[in-house]
Image: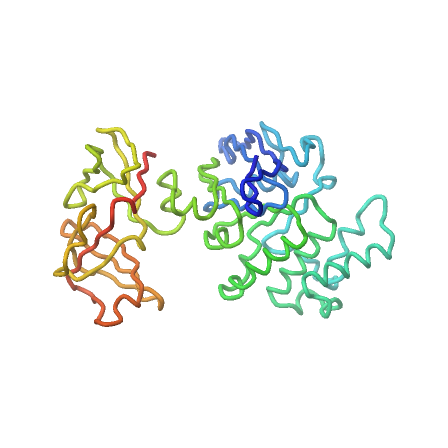
Length: 373
């Protein structure tokens, strides 16, 4: 069962169950035994790089691909024998796939015209009007797609997807065609629309910011496998493997041998103290992930941070100024680069370090995450 974030500990039933689904293309295992449960009205994101299998999984949900093994059960119905045109799903493609010769209202009505038995003309008109009102596109009803902006086309495509009242809405990179500023604004608008309708939604994206902004839970995929499922906070703060730690956000990753609660690695000048709640096997290989915002930066001559702190001295190799914060790349004596993200307000009373300056990087042991795979 999936926890309902709106009601504390009350679980919601599994509305969609993906059970051991596998899909091959010749010798390539595109989806490798994926199992997943999604709750009703949940917005779930499949996140991964190109070729990881996320879009293939989405197409199997839509009925555009058939699994070689496993089951897909939606609202208690096994979809194995249900063809794509009869499934209670609707898919919004990255390109939006609007018909250029049809008006906005005709595009939204297109799927309703295909319904069998046929819907009454008045019912089609009412649904189209309701959808255009939902996405605030009533005034553009008579326009053609080429007369709309990218953001407006995206709204029309969403209205068309929702017009048939699907049980499951599938979004394939829905905002990829928009520029960054419009995309950031549209993310929350899209979430609000989906939540108002109350439809269960699966979003496929390679954009981690998009996934973390829009979804209540995220599934990270790589090479056809589902590596980790969790809330955005869980995925970022407690990754369960190196791929997730490196793919979601940026991290400093140290590799070494565990001995007595410390990680002994060649590219750090002292044994790295591990979190007290970590329990890796002594003598085994492990990695430590430390997010850049957990790394403190100070002048090399400043007072040490204190007990329980990992620290090393190096020089500033690169700086990326990003307004609210700066990202420092600090080169240690052995050549290892440590990345620190530092709030601009830290240097309010003094000039910030610059290229070539000697600095100390440090973090407390609990700020690292131990990974064994």
